[in-house]
Length: 242
Image 1 (cartoon, rainbow, N blue to C red):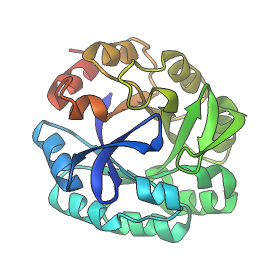
Image 2: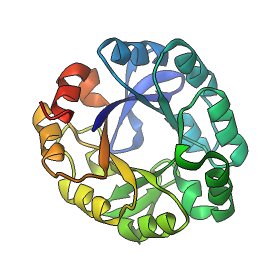
Image 3: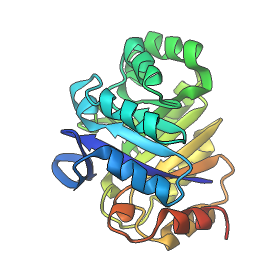
Image 4: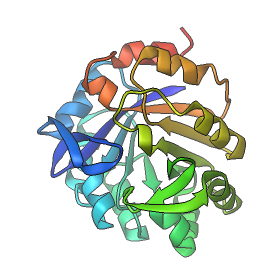
């Protein structure tokens, strides 16, 4: 299992939101590249970059920051936020993204999803963002009544094999992961997924490891790293089973 340190970009800065609320953001780095470089220096094997402006506006805004990060840092970068057209996905890949994370558009525009999968295959990751087990979209600003399992099964039937599951109500609170949600996702996913939301300690990471779900292959962590609850190296050691 791999640790994916998060670099969330809002107004050109590295920030963290609380419960997905754009008006509850904390700025940690004026330059997102500084945040990404710090995680690499601590031993990160990959980075998870989210263009929050893009997620809110529906089209990428911070692609130049993505390009700077991928150009300077020698590791795979996973990029999401506002990727709702095939042109936007191509731009992210051209900017150096090893994987592209699609959210809202994956379930609203089937033709787009099919085109992205046909062109980029396993480089496509679909983000399942949920509150109380039900799907949220449009940069977490819209809530639906659709159970996450239904969404995952529909996407899996179309060929999606990589997912991110985010527990929005825990995001940025350091209150521990949604273990029940992680189990539900593991049962539904026919492929692999990464977990995100609420991780605040090394013990939280151990609890995810102890789920022993073979298709859970990554954990995205943001605020706990920024707040120095643990280092990237310490977290990766736990995820490696040490």
